Image 1 (tube, rainbow, N blue to C red):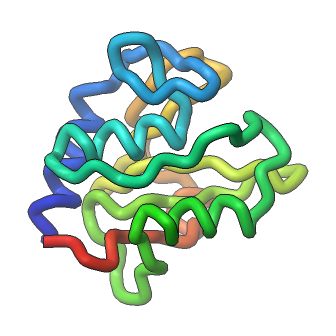
Image 2 (cartoon, helix red, strand yellow):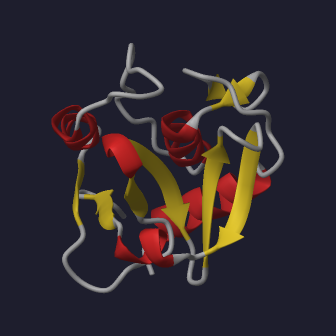
Length: 136
């Protein structure tokens, strides 16, 4: 298991309960799904190039993938690892990010208005997984 990714997952777990906030990137004031991923990796010791100006809805797959590539993530081709970033596609092509654990997903849930840890469901298990291309 990649130490940086595991530390990022642990950092995300420590953020469970943080309020949801659109464009939020600071656990003190609130996080959205992208902000959670970037904040968790920063807390783990890796500052990533963060996307800005993205919408809550209507962010295209190309823009999501470009933001991940710019932050030096690549698609995971082997088995899922703790700390991988899941890119979940919801109906109407809405994209959602979260951090994968062995049996859970940590993500900023807009409906519940906070960061949550939930058991992996079918969409999370089927999600395209991304990991840092130059991780420790």
